[in-house]
Length: 518
Image (cartoon, rainbow, N blue to C red; front, side):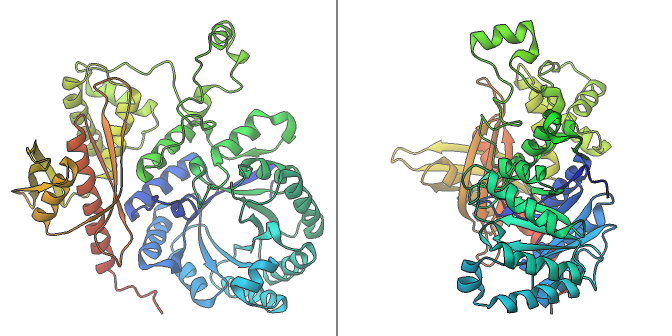
């Protein structure tokens, strides 16, 4: 192993999906996995195979679609979890099982209700069984940040003896400070003495996820577990883009350390994850936030005009963001210029069919919108790829406010080449639209979350609507995306997108006999 290379272990599809409201369907997960591979991620934790048939199916399809990155499934230290993980990643060219058990006194006593010697035994059994499926086994000491060093050494020694190649030290509740993480890693690095790779998984509860990760790297950790945009449970995980750019920007402090990440794919990956999950980074988010490279202060602007390095320690182009070429296309632009632009934006693997569909939508938009921005084009491409499986398609809608405060909506939907129309009233226009869609399709959805944002600036900005809808209490909520200059049209499309995702998931699970279930 190259001891200067930092292995990037991305858990956006597993821990990142545990962010409230960030659920993704299988098609969306595959799209993110393909982009993560393009980004240069070493290990993709594709999910938790034993969690549900849907998770198993998504991991299995990702394992078949990815040929460069290692595909990993999480598994508790139980026989069934490990079996599901092994079966789910069976088709992957490079595969890993990541199994874990808690090692902190508080977790062992209150969650596991197990004595320490029993925990060690379970850890050994888990790694030994995982080795019957894969050669590459990672073991995590859950809540390592609050575990006792002597016991961690005992567990680490045992699982390395059983065949674990990577030892992960999660600060599960984001409790530790950088100097504490550095000391923990340094002591275990000396104890392990090259027998396994040390990995870090730091949560951001105190805003220290990235700082703790970088501190651990300087002490000998050579794998970092992170997510795009810092997604994850509670306050999230250490953000991949911040870790990678910190190492690249401060080479003087990291003494030859590097990652395999193609940093020019960072912005595209961030936008894709934000679009799919509906969770946008805050404007002042480091590296990928809307204001990350914005300069409003007159003093800063003057300095930037004289020398960029006065107020920027990295270039927007380093992460694939072209700040100097944002408005170049209009209604007279041709297909060749459009294709060249989307390649500049990082969409160089788009099919001819998707390209033509996106171009047609671009021409329609250009007739209505004076200025077309890069953000407009990026969202057109992404929206098309997210809404390919259309069982139901919104054709048109008409809304009206009634004098008593109620609103009505007339909706036309295309289904199996047939146009179906109906109308309904509701408590507001959005409610009326959704109730009409329920009447037409026969599926009653419960709206869990709704958000709308302008894709770009100006009064003619595209509206991007994200809906989170539950159609069956036995299934997870579905996320739908809608795009239009008209917010009501975008809302209808988003709601139908959620329904189409639900139907796609049902069909996928129905077509499989789920032989992995025991």
